[in-house]
Length: 492
Image (cartoon, rainbow, N blue to C red; front, side, top):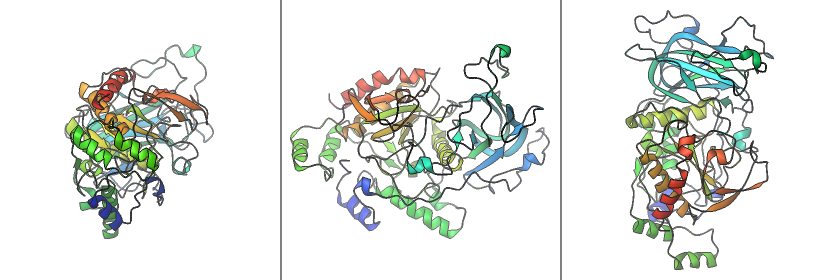
C-alpha cells in the first residue's frame, strides 16, 4: 500500500519491535487456535425457581475466567435415533442453567456444510431470572469466511457456524434446531406449514454444538489474569505491543482511540505516507495533485475495546491494496446498548476465533448504531489487512460490519454517516473514488466462479459478491447515500 506515516515514533517503535514496514512482507507465524473447549467444570448454583440441574447441565468449557466459552453438544429432540450418517432432524438442548454468557451461536464440523433449517434460542436473564421469548439465530453464515485456498480457510480447525446472537448477561438457555427445506414457511412455534407438500427434510450437519460466549469485563486483558500464568501474560503483553505498533504513526502506543483530524491534517498525513511501493513518476504525480481523501475519523483501537491479543494467531496478513469496501451486518440482533459494544465485539472476536476457528475477528472495521467506529482485524487501520468477511473477495478489499440486523430494521443515520466517513478516509488512502466502479478477481463464491473479473461498486454490499441477505435489505438500500456522502467528504 502507500504505507503508513513515516514519523520518527512509528519507525522507531516498529524497528524496536522488529516489525517490517512493508505490509506484504509481514509474514505471520501461525499459532494453532485450540478447538472448542471440552466440558470440565460445574456451574454456579442456579437462581431459585430455575429448572433442576442435571448431569448434562453441569457441562462447561473452561474454569470461569474473564472471557470464556461453554461448548455444549446438541441432543436429539425427537424419538428418531440419530447416527453419524443420519443425524436427527431436530436437535437442541432442553432448558437448563449454565454459567454466565452474553452471546450465542451454533457450530458444526464441516465448514462447507450448510444448515438448512431453523435455529431458535431462548435465554434467562441473569439477576432477574426472566426467560426471553424464542429468538431466531441467522443460519446462513458461510459467506463470511476466508477465501478458498488460503491458509486460514484450509486450517483444520475451521468450522461451519451460524451468525452469533447477542442476548445480554444470561445464565440459562434452551435451544432447538429443526431441519427444513429452504423456503419452508414456519409458525411462531417453529412448526413447518404444509409439510406434506414439501421435499424431505435435509439432514442437519454433523457435530452440532451450542457455543455460549462470555466476553469478559472491560479491563485490558494484558493487565488481567490470563490462563497459563505469567508466561501467558508476557506473551499477551508482547502481542498487544506489536498490535499497537502498527498504528503508532496515527496514535501514541497504548492509545485506546485514534483521534479524528481535520481534512487539512489528513491531507498532510497522506502526503507524508511512505510511498516506497510507488515508482518515482507515481510519487511525483501524487505530490503535484491535491489528494481526494476524507478527514480521518475517530477509531477505537483493539486495546480500546479490550481485545485479548493472545487469543488470535500471532503476526499479521496483508493483501496488496484496497480497491473496494464491502459493507456487512453482523446479524447479531439490535438489542444492545452502545455502552455494551466493547463486550459485543469481544464476544464476536472470541466466537470467530475459538468457536469458528479463524485466525482473528473477520471484519476489518465494526460500526455501532451510535456511529462509533472500531478497529477490527489486527494489522493497522491504514494498512491493507487481509480479512475474512466476503468469501471470494477478501483480497484487495476491506470489510466493514455494522453491528446489528438490518433486514427489517433501518440502520441509524449515525451508522450510515460513519460508513461514509470511514470509506472516504480509508479508500482515499489508496486514491479510490467511493462513487466509482472497480474490478476484483473472484477467488470463488456461489455467485462468481474462481478467476472471474467482476465489476463492482467501490462501496458494495456483501450480497454483491455472494448470494446472501447480508448486509440486510434496509442497510443495503442506504449504500447509495453512503457513496455520495463519502465522495463529498473526499472533496469530489
